[in-house]
Length: 187
Image 1 (cartoon, rainbow, N blue to C red):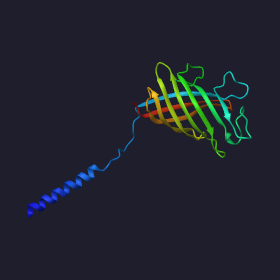
Image 2: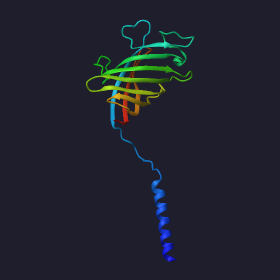
Image 3: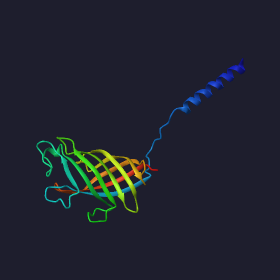
Image 4: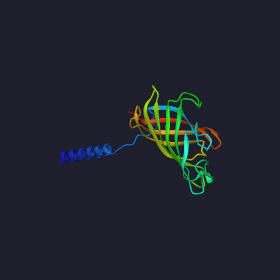
């Protein structure tokens, strides 16, 4: 009888141990990026007079707006498409390593903010392929994080975070964004 109790106790103990070790565990701590990069993209908005140099244009605006000047009310309702040069430094005239291509929508009346969807399309010998981004951009914050949602080529299925910082702003015509990219899934 004593042997049966001991055997039963050992069986129950092993059962409890196997249940507790089978439960999923979550890693804690800070993840390290598998790849980090910094790029600058330069946006020159078409204003009716700069067609030769413009890299972006308003393609949609609210009824009270027009397509050559950003609307009032925090530019609410403007839809802008862009094809901006990407450089490794903050000089607009540096050799581009690719293009930032996509759109932004000014999406709030009461706060100066936008929603972004774009890709970095690389054409350099250092990088081949593209990185895709999407997310809200609260423009009045010094830094803003948006999601890296995929990529092609060297960045196939990349996932991570890009931290944007407005590095220069010249009225309603030009701005430069510093983009710190940290990828947490690299193939």
